[in-house]
Image (tube, rainbow, N blue to C red; front, side, top):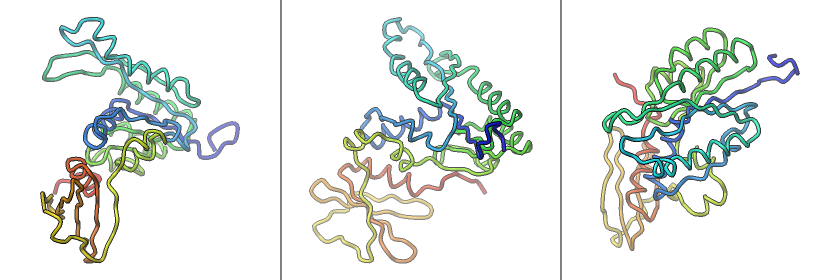
Amino acid sequence: MSYSSGIKNVKYLFIDGGCLDSLLESFSDKLFGKKQLEIDYCRLANGYHKVFYYDCLPAQKQGENQVDYQNRIKPKIKLFNHLKSLDRFHVYEGTARFRDKRRGQEQKEVDIMIAVDMYRHSSRKNMDEATLLTSDLDFKPLIDALVQEGMYVSLWYPKTKANYELVDAADSRQALTVYTVWGWLTEDFRKKVSLPIFEKSSLLPIDDSWTQVDNIEQSTYEVFVYEKENNYIAVFQTIEGDYNLYQHNNLDQLKFFIVHIHSPDVIRYS
């Protein structure tokens, strides 16, 4: 038992804000028509006693005037203020600098703050379980140290975006998929967008009225994509002989969804 108050199984969530931003931006760009995703952060943090969010404001770019810069960072400031207003949430800001066009922005202090805070809470036995949302391999030594000290560490990471060494270091791990993010979205935003409709069938429901327009070939599967009247259906045959069917009205979004869902959670190299 960790808390003096007697609470059992105290869980803290530590969020690498840059990693979360990258995940949300990817889904916004590839699957939701570049709409700004509306996240219910209380849903994201469900089950956690405290949430620590780490990020920094974007650095001012070379040649960028002050007015443009202030307009660009307004959404991030709004997010920080929103998170600070939520119960259980704590926001810690690092600094950033813009190096050049090729290397882009470099964060400073954020990784160190996360490592120090996680280790401090662990050593003080404030928590029974620590969850870290990140894809940064630099956190592997931290996870190794916490595990060796007896802390139970779980890792949340964007699907296919984390090194297997980082994933394997944690006691448990969860790949963050489009379904994960869908569960975080507000009800109002869900009404504005849609995911491909999934169904399973023992028969192939494709006749001559459908035209094959594409196929997605990976090392372990092949998906055939058909079109009729601006609607698309992707067909994936399982090893049992049944068919997984995905329907959507946007070809690019459907293809991204298929690759995302059927890719392994983490890439391992033999």
